Amino acid sequence: MADEVFGVEHVSYSYLGRIMALDDVSLTINRGETVAFVGANGSGKSTMLKVLDGLVYPDSGQVRAFDQLMTEQSLEDDQMIEMFRSRVGFIFQNSDAQVFSPTVREEVAFGPLNMGLDSSEVSRRVDDVLNMLDLSTLSARAPYQLSGGQKKRVAIASVLVMNPEVLLFDEPTAGLDPRSQRWLVELIVELARSGKTIVIATHDLETLPILANRCVVFGEDHRIAADGPTVAILDDVELLRSVNLIHDHVHRHDGTWHVHEHEPDHHF
Amino acid sequence: MTMAQAVTTTPRWLLESQVGLCSCGRNGLRRKTGFVEKTITGSTGLVRTVLRSDDIAASSGLMQSIDERIKLISIVLMLVAVSFVRHASLLLAAYAVTLVFAHLSQIPLRFFVKRVWLFIPIFTGIVVLPATLNVITDGRIVVPLGTVFGHRLGITSQGLQAAALIVSRVALSISLVVLLTLTTAWSRLLSALRSLFVPRIFIVILGMAYRYIFQLLDVTDEMYVARKARTVKADRASASGRRFVAATAGSLFGKSNELAQEVHQAMVARCWRGNARTLASRRISMRDVLWFGGCVFVALVVLVIDRSLGG
Image (cartoon, rainbow over all chains, first blue to last red; front, top):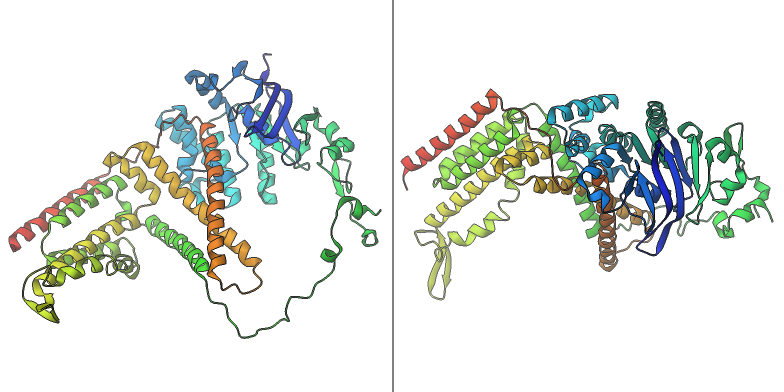
């Protein structure tokens, strides 16, 4: 239990009480792990991240974080919420939702200011993170003046500045150009090496072996279809096909995915 | 069954090439721009204007170098002084000074003048027009307009003076506000509102509203472009335009609601507990103090001259 960061037991969640997102999900995430939630669109992996971050509360089942039970009531407790929010960072898929302040600098300062850090410490941290992510020249820019890749970097900066020990990424590489994708993958690997616990919701199978050691597969029935080492999961073509992550024309050989083209005379 | 049949249900016609609905080339008929397109173009124009204003605010002119709080307070002070001035000539002289400040702040004069005078004839002009008539402002008729029910109707010199006073006061006030807004980035202007004791939470909400205006404009633009890309026949009926506007409004409402929920989650995820906290402001420099002193001095001098002119 000492190494447990999150403990999820029999969690079910539905949107508006009718659209099922999670059905009887149980899993444990330990300190220092790099875990990927994979599954087809709508399988519940993003909802699972929001449950882990205490942004939505399960209809049934329970979630523990750092050995504390997470409920709507417990997260209203000042000490509990301060502890939890400063230890867990969430990078949303939609950077436009996460980058809400009038300027980049104010955006990055939002978290530490709300953590109650004094202004000199906030300024120091903001400067360091802006430098680290090569955002210093954009610090006075408004969000509408940023590209998609730049917004993603600002969103990441706004979370890293709080120095959380757990990072939850929702579809981190979605919508990014190849260069930004590579940069982000390298950053996540570096953060994982530094000992941070990383949980990623993704359906990008290409980067999966680099990003995560463990893979939790969500089926279209919103249940966990498999949970194991990433390499073993990726080698199980039948499993990936059954959860609609790959189709008949994609195969993996020697760690690389291959797409088989249709022969023209195969059409009809 | 082939492999393709096993995974898709693509209809045959989709895989066959199709000749366009009419022959290529022009028939000389042109489609007029509808009200929807004009509105969307207007929104793009707004973004362009904002970007230009941001560029001016980021340049290194005189007023850009002044602390935003000092600038805001000094402009408010000047506005109060302007409201007490009773001579149009003095107001016009002060207006000339704002032109000098605009130039020193690297604001293109044409842009500055246009921004101030574009709306004055429309709004203030209509309001003051009746005041020039002898039925409202009694006095010596300088422009006779005829007789109504046996009474002479005309524009009086006193009415013209009153109208000139109001128009010049409005023009000067707007010029001062435009000077402030063009030389200060919107985010800084918002944080400067703290110096006028505007609550922090109000400033945070205003800042977020301003930030997401552009997001929603983008969405609207994308929806319109998507519709335009699929509009084959010229659609001259304004009814379909109205239907599109209603559908866009409904869709935008849904999207903004969804976005608002996600933004709230993003705020909560970063320790937001309902207390707005902002970065510490810059320190006031000697230049700021001199600017403020200069503004107070000018306001006093204008008021003294106004009193000495009598009236």
